Image (spheres, rainbow, N blue to C red):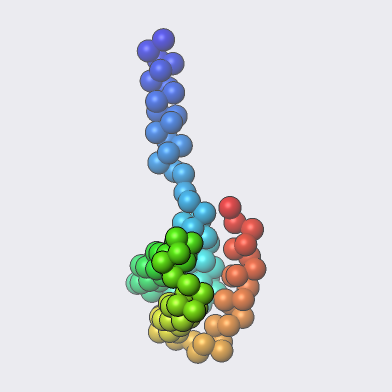
Amino acid sequence: MRRILASLVLATLFMVSFAQSPAEKKSEYFIKAAVEEFDLDKKQKKTLTKERSEYVTELQAIYKAKKNGDLNQEEFKPKLNKINAAFKQTMCEITGKTNAELKPFFTRMQKEMKDIK
């Protein structure tokens, strides 16, 4: 009985430790694709990981504020645009590409990440 209980506890801990939210899965997918697409080194990958995490956190915060009624559509749109523009600028700095060169990548990622759950 103890072994069964211990096995169940270990299995639960294992599943919980490896469970990821959809946002984490999407970020991981985005970072992996960016590293492959733009031949990023370890330092660039680390920077991108940090920046992408901050970007997602900011996005989640403004979407939550909008959902709670703290932001109306007129306040939401400029904040969203500001966050997106800042991340795009960061991507330009990390990859050494222009915004126009990054646009096809962002468009492709947007389509591909819709299916990630």
